[in-house]
Image (cartoon, rainbow, N blue to C red; front, top):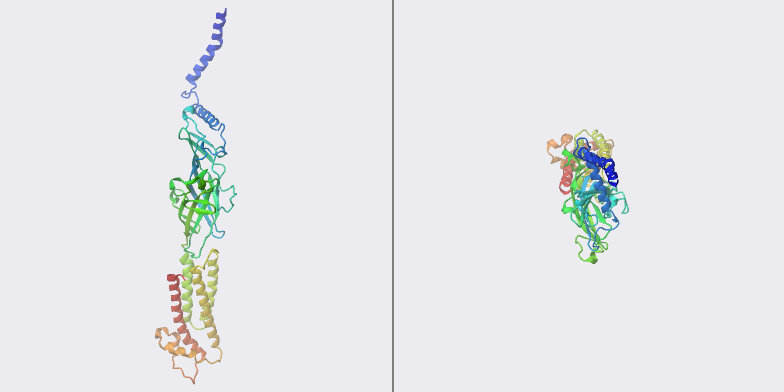
Length: 439
């Protein structure tokens, strides 16, 4: 009776279940045409990932530095990937955008890939793992700023050896730092601004270093624009990264060696951005107006006496307008006045003086005042001028007679020829000093 009951149980319950499993393996597996292979595979991989994360994070604390020997510091390799640089010459600031790559080793987040279907990588959230606390020492937002680096970055864990795993983090950043610019050589000024990164832990715990001494990567554009280096008014010449060390208020380029020095020293990384002004319109906007004003001022002395003051007054008015447009883009942070501004202002003052002399002499021609005898010595100078340069005065030549003083009209005619020659050489000298000596 017992045997009969056992056989009935096998035929009724066990055999249907066994056939169902066989059918599933034959027709519903990963290689079955009727089964959903992709869903089956992803579900299996997801299960392994979930199990892996539960295993490695069991008892793990992101607040504890991931080393088994607390006397061994954690070395963090850093590399900068810069995608944009913005320079504000009025605020004396520089804003850098991009990604920062950080890499270190964790001795707690380890596993055997054989136990998890050969998985060597795990992708987790940033807040789940220990990470170095880094700050920007010269941030315009202050040391306590929490917005310099993104908080939503993902972390990749790679199992390297049996006793440690490699951690890679690639957050974005947008950092605004204060700088000290000097535009005294405008528009040929060159400046440098630094972004200083440091760890809040001493070198006994965390040490920052540049990844393989590779300079920061610049990617200001894609494809044909990948070599772009000109942004707004400036051209980026070079971006470099260097290490230095802070201890007791002093900065050194020599790394500490002893344990005591390590416990009182902080490692820092400096990203130095060197740039120069990009001014392709400098000649057209500054040099050409200077040359033109000098030529027009000198030419006015070749025109009739009554037209010369009008030409110079119009010239001064135009120069004032040009000066206003010239000083608008001029940065305020200068130790000395730029040479181009000195030249332009000197020419404007000179044109004003020459115009004033012309107006005064023209006004004296309408008076009956006598010409001082000392002024009439210009006849001696006029005698030595070539006839082609004597202008209107070539028909007025006469030997000075003390008993018959020269009129202001005749004096003005002779004097304008000499003053025109003087102004010509005067402007030539000004441009030579500007080009050669930079005065």
